[in-house]
Image 1 (cartoon, helix red, strand yellow):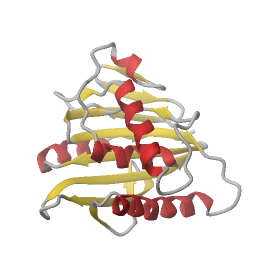
Image 2 (cartoon, rainbow, N blue to C red):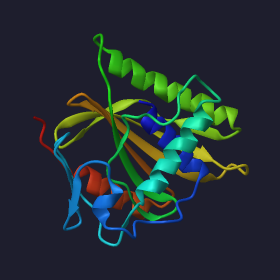
Image 3 (cartoon, one colour):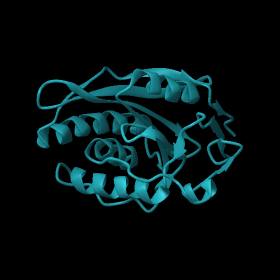
Image 4 (cartoon, one colour):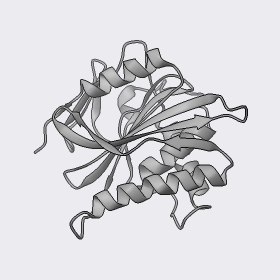
Length: 208
């Protein structure tokens, strides 16, 4: 599950400066984009990209993941980019209001393993922020339904040196068809957040 960890952490440290000028389908590892709608048969997911939002270039998302893994490696024994990591759909309004999604194979060896890993991930993230001198407050972990599926979710509020809020991050995770699926919503504008949340909550899942 280090995929979402890396993206969460690096989303704070970097600013996306390029969007997908290439054909949209070249910007995703799996699934396809047609009529401004992304669909993925592997996890049975469909989401509509908000009008006026740009698909993020895949190489930029990969840069996020690589740099995030490196930063997290300073906190815990985490390898670099996962060979199984798949960049799904990522789109943005600007450099601080970004929707990112990934999946990664996760083999469950005992009951409750995935849930335990998720909670450990949250604590690791807090340690990483602290080590970088970043003040962050985390919400309680809860579950939230997206198209009748329960996702584990929590929020990070990140503060600047003067005590002002500079970014918020809503994180969603679920185990689907052998994959650890993660969604990271970064925002500093409530209107843009609402657009991303509307797209996310209206997305559809058809689990095989």
